[in-house]
Length: 383
Image (cartoon, rainbow, N blue to C red; front, side, top):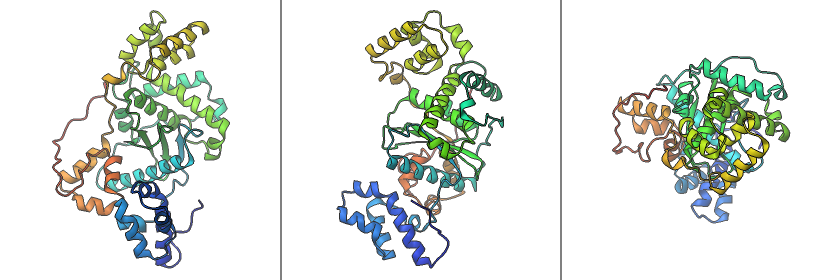
């Protein structure tokens, strides 16, 4: 849908345009409220401002300000979706909206709280994605580890690392198993954003997704959207981000030194150290040429036979890493009485449950009679 000029024309006409745009935002929720199809169409086409706004607010609990707020677009931002082919257009559009909502929440919090500074290397990347070869990516992952003083060992909390380096991270339900994660670099604020899916509830997958999106943010930040949307180019940039994630989470030489015998049981032991899936380690031994082609096939057959490609044995023992920064920022505002819960809700024109989910707040935290009060807790060490 083409962007319209939000700041010209009579105010009532602008409000109608906003309501029509907002109706697209809440279409899924309207269907979830089991309203008739005719009512859904009326939300989109109604020209009476007051009635249309009231109509939508009642079933989906959006504040009136949501429908009068100037629409936002990821203008100039490159967004990286993991599955351009399998994810439907509607699910990607839904993801884009939540990306914009997350930016709005971050902008609001930045008025009161100093968020972690962005600490990304400013190295020049090759001009063409075709020049990002596997050996280059392996070396780059090692350079990033050195730049962030991570050493060669396992990373205890990849999500915390990302937040410490200035990425705004959110973990939400995306309502689609085809979307694992996506990220974008906001050029206006010079800040990266990363949204993880909570739908699969897999700790190991989530850790890998963070590393994968880090790869995009480091390798592909300057690639134009036209190139990314090209199917062949998208497959290539996805393969490059996969290679970066593997090299970043499991550095080549330390891993090779650990691998005393290339069997599935040996990889099962090593996954406890590196905190990645067995399947990822099978990929890793193959891409590092630590096994022959025949050995690689046997590893995959054995992995499939044990059911570890879909249900990793370590996953049930770990809880998914949780984003902390936005939650603690809201906690600071409320508990230091910098902003009341009502002030927060009136300043952020979103459904309260969406604010709580995007910021990883407990459900009901923004209610005025909320029982949630947290004591300050020290930030865990990355060592």
